[in-house]
Amino acid sequence: MRYIAAILLTSFLLVQCTTSDEGKLPEEVAEKYRIEGSEIVNFTATALSGRLKGAIGDSGIVGAINYCNIHALPILDSLSKAQNVTIRRTSSKLRNPKNKPDDFEKNILTLFEHAKEKSKELKPQIGIDKRKRINYYHPIEIKGLCLNCHGTKDNGLALRNYEEILKLYPKDKAINYSEGDFRGMWVVTFKDTISSGL
Image (tube, rainbow, N blue to C red; front, side, top):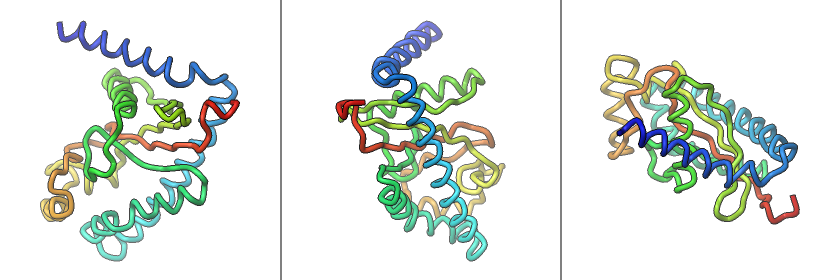
């Protein structure tokens, strides 16, 4: 019964995704946003990663945890303004409650999660939200460095580091990952809407 329910849920989500996003955009337009979204995510991830590594070098993992708490969202805001989009990250297992996904984003996260469970390649998606804005969704998978803050007690996550995380995020759920696990996704929201004559 659970297996049938899972199939029905996946089918429903696939229909929702298709009818709510790329199905309303000509393929060449969707591809344009996929390319632009990918470039924005790569630039943003590289910038954040570079600053995070700098913080680790300066003050260790605990210092980096505090750096992220103070600076991650302002950095994303700054990069968003510079590129005339909105850039954020979200997940089903939140650390910062400010990154909570909306209902449509929950559907996309579920699609990525099901794909990962079936060992399928996670491919970025284009979606159109309730405001008719075009969004680019880019999956985030855990890398080795991430385990310092998102791993398990036996694999990367030191007790001292997790205690510091809990001071800043008392309701944290973003642990117990292994390298290669699906963590969440980048969301790039463009200023364009489907009513802009696209």
